[in-house]
Image (cartoon, rainbow, N blue to C red):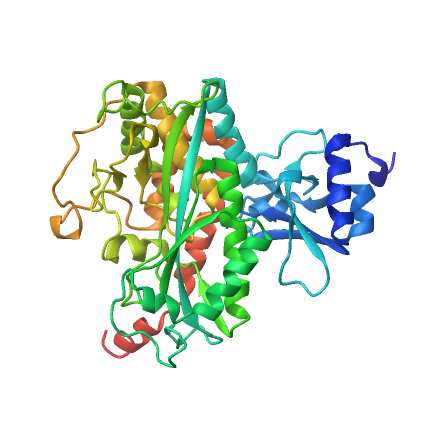
Length: 463
């Protein structure tokens, strides 16, 4: 049998018909088949809609999940992927089909899942990593609910990487110079860009809830409504692409780099999380008495405290991520928790019992949303399994002024911590964790090969 004719598990007929009808009703001419890669960016293929309507599948080499952000490969590449560097089979998730509102011709985008030739979920695909963790919750009769908050900067176009990034001019023609936290007028400076962003989000049915101006110059935050973890990861993945496109249409960049400017704060991906009973939908974090949380909530919280330091490579996946954590003004530097205490890495908002939740503040906006959510949910589930107990809550400031720093200070340290944590390996998938560590170590080594301008300026003639 030829490779072209190799059988694969077909898309269910109901799903196939629904997708065909969706494409036909909107006169779609092209379909973008998207796959989130290790960094959380879109890879895939663009195919004609008439071919997609009867083919319902395409392939990509599995090597896209063993490639660094610079396009390099780790030394053990052929140990991480199959010896033949095989293709993966892609299958569309019909729930993710959306218009591409910035395309000239009617174009659809569909997130695809990756499978091996024997129809098993590919272990290196970030979407499958999250699905693996969610399956572990389902086995326990539980279902996580999350609400992400995504921060980002608008910056002037920068075509020369040797020059620092600068805030863009708004409608007034002047860039921001003072801190404008929660300023309505500062947000309105970028109305044309944000109006386009909202138009795109509406066309794509993204559940953007609120928009605020953050602490930094031209730094904004978008909040999403709470829902299941997979749909929220999908929406953050699509939103990043959407926001970059809206900004580019107005001649500037939107960046999700964790610490893009030396004298500005970093950007985070805060993840509010709770867990509900899969059958009843009841929030199992709520206690039986008003104002109290359940024992399961405490186990979950303790799991975050114990395992977050070993999962930091997923929350802070790039060398730049640690500039935000170590030098950020309000970035989390500890695994303490407190009620409505933003100096803690784990903040428990004051809310109604049914909305009992914890906000993990560790992930940067540069994190892959699928892996950040998979990692934080895995930490909490390990706490539940091990019936861990958290430290007492703190109402004190445990921020930068406390002098405490309890997390890895570099990507290298974070990868060492992750490598030693076998419980996380088991939940996320040993093959995936091994590949992730190899990819990120290669990136870390590549970074250290670069001689910076600081070294040339201060060391060239002074040492």
